[in-house]
Length: 137
View 1 (cartoon, one colour):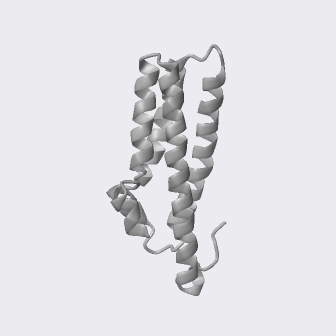
View 2 (spheres, one colour):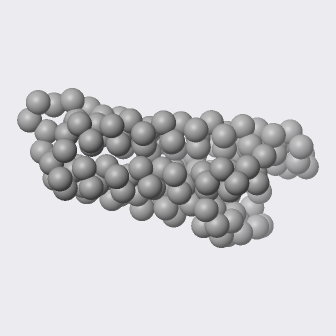
View 3 (cartoon, one colour):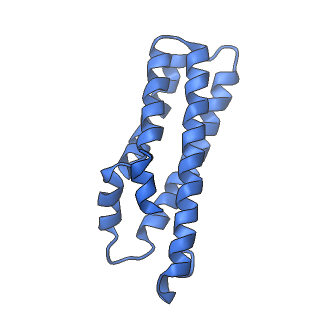
């Protein structure tokens, strides 16, 4: 299952490097991703809400998009990061329709990533030793 994330281009090798940071803590990666998912869900919702405003200034969306891109790139979420790049370009081009479409694609790729990794961690907890069978808080 893990390999499919790489085969499908969902995750990059950056994910492996992040995994290695928590070699001595079986819950490190899951805790890190829980924070990423919480913050990213809020960021995407804020972007969607901003794009619904009739007077949305697309240039002001670049900063939150770059923040989301940095967080996504740091965990190796390559498909999410690519879609964010397209949203940034649409904002720079003052293309509201393009920005809306890009944010929708960001959300779609994000949901695929989140569901896949949640399923992966659930399998890992069931298959792993008892000390990692409990989900971290």
